[in-house]
View 1: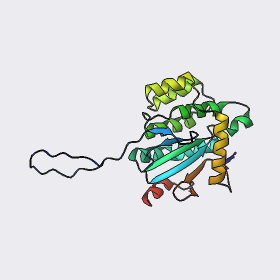
View 2: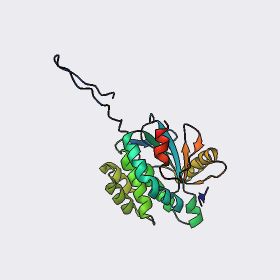
View 3: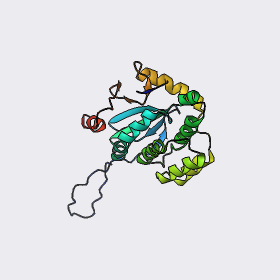
View 4: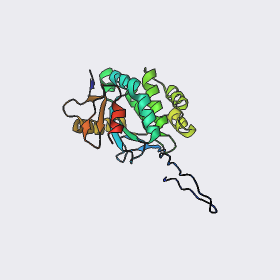
Length: 214
């Protein structure tokens, strides 16, 4: 049950010798804040598959989703054929009378940086869900470093610098979730931006099938 809300490669040839055809490398995109500043875009905005993923850091179903799909997401983000906009929510803080989702969500927003590769960001997400619990700032920073995030980003997370107002983020992303998945607005929800449909992630290989269809 879901938790409710709530190069072209330029080849310069010198002389007249023939050169072998070059193979274009996929664009390696970083991780930035979405235009609305309440999401994190991991990957290229030109990737053929564009997903929005709605999650709460304390959501157990989100943890299961990341355990099952996090590695595949990381591979496709590295390949450049998928981009993910994570929309973090904090509604479980109210239900559980804590601030864990806000604290972890702030760290995940702080991790948005052009120097943070999309794959490293996904690794961070997966690792945080795997560890679970109520991580301290030191825990969040340690996991960021282990996930391959750049040192300045790790230091920012360790300092607990506010990257977003958690209440405003939750409210904004709640509206986005209700628009994307009005029939079942729970977390996790994976939304295909191109087809404007909710993705069924229950079957293994769902991401590969999406990529193959584009």
